[in-house]
Structure formats: structure tokens, C-alpha cells
Amino acid sequence: MHELSICSSIAKIVNRSANGRPVRTIHLQVGQLRQIVPETLVYCWGLVTADTVLDGSILEVDRIAAVVTCQSCGQIREVGAHPNFSCTGCGGTHVEVTSGEEFLITTLDLAEVQEHG
Ligand SMILES: [Zn+2]
Image 1 (cartoon, helix red, strand yellow):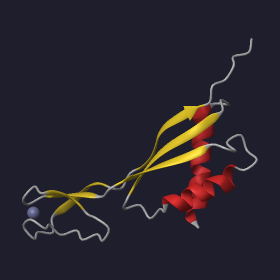
Image 2 (cartoon, helix red, strand yellow; image 1 turned 120 degrees about the vertical axis):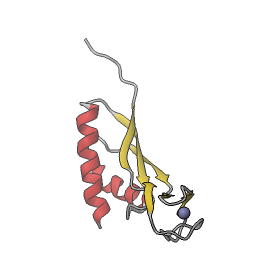
Image 3 (cartoon, rainbow, N blue to C red; image 1 turned 45 degrees about the vertical axis):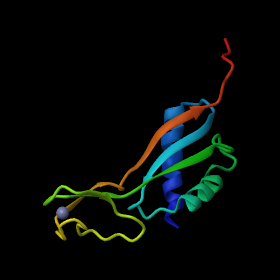
Image 4 (cartoon, rainbow, N blue to C red; image 1 turned 90 degrees about the horizontal axis):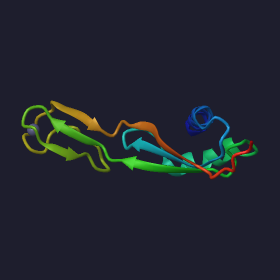
């Protein structure tokens, strides 16, 4: 299950960014074209972060719809659940994927901490 290795990578990045501060929520953008099931990712996050500093943090997955732009007629459309990459406007196949391949951590919500010293 590759979601496990993805979660390990995310945990590394989050740990580096948080720099020891407690993290409450991790916001993630995942494009539709990525072969990633958000529910599985959230489940694996729980496994990967158990008994670590990130234990109890929440992974918020923001699914980004796949969008293609036709290079012939300029039509922009969402691909939908059943990807078909030819243009519905002119029938052309010169379409470019302009959205849907995202995979990035957008923001981290840090828990309030009392400053010591
Ligand atoms: Zn077209």
C-alpha cells in the first residue's frame, strides 16, 4: 500500500517544518489524477504517526478536480470521474492537464503552546 510510504514522507516534511512545535492539522492538496485514496491516506496517517510527536494530528485532504484545457479550441473542463482526455468541444486530442496532479502540503495548523523561558 503506497499510502504508507507517502505518509512517512509527509511526516518527515511536517516534522521538519514544525521544528518541534505540536501540530494539530496538516492540510494537503491531492489532485484527482494522483492514484491516492484520501480515506486510505488518512487511515495510514494514523498508523504512521502512532506513538510519535505527530500522534493525534489530523490529515485534512483537499481533493483537487482534474481539469484539462484544449490546445485547439481553448475549452476548459473538468475531467470528471471517468477520465477521457479528448476535447468535448472540438473532439481534438491536444488537451493539456492543467489541474489534478497536485500533491502538496498547503498549511500546518500548530497547537497553541506556552512559551517557556
Ligand atoms: Zn477543443
